[in-house]
Image 1 (cartoon, rainbow, N blue to C red):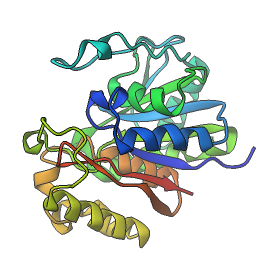
Image 2: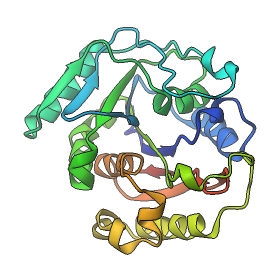
Image 3: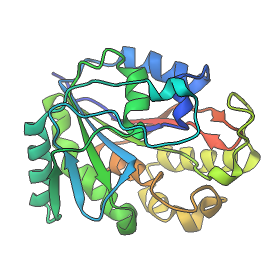
Image 4: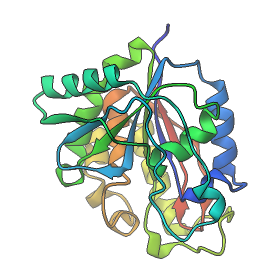
Length: 258
């Protein structure tokens, strides 16, 4: 099997699972174009822990970690199997590079995981192992997590980092989920991000809060941007494979790393 790419996807609001948007159509089409992985390791912004933690459930439950959304979302179950042996192997890899790592045998799939996966791999027949983020430890730590996971790409494991290119919920226009015109501030940040990734300027990316336009506005907290650094660590050079906006200010950009 050839080496799989590493992905960063913006998972947006939970309504991505049921809304007709460009990002939804992209994920459906892109997922169908990928070689079938033997398993998926997904780093999700919606699982924050103090220590690096890997989900080791044999049958991860679907976590509906949101409120006030359409009832149809709460009926969705993404019943992919887990892979406890792979979870232990990932925790061992993290431990081998000096991280305090653990396996959580009861962890399910939060919407940062199951929403994009339900579009990319709707059959839910590929084992999924979730990986947490440590927000307080910042980009360098997230990149180290990715580097520890990188060898799995040669063993048929697809590494997906699920977060958001921009994530300021207070700036969203909730009345316009399918707005295709981005707020100029969001567009400026997305274009800076694309240029930095295209140039493989990892120093600039790590220092994004000082260098990127409107960085602290778009990421008042870092948990939704940190998965990008896991993708950077696990992959090589990156390229943008999708860009669109939803709710005006939520950029849905996705990147593939070779």
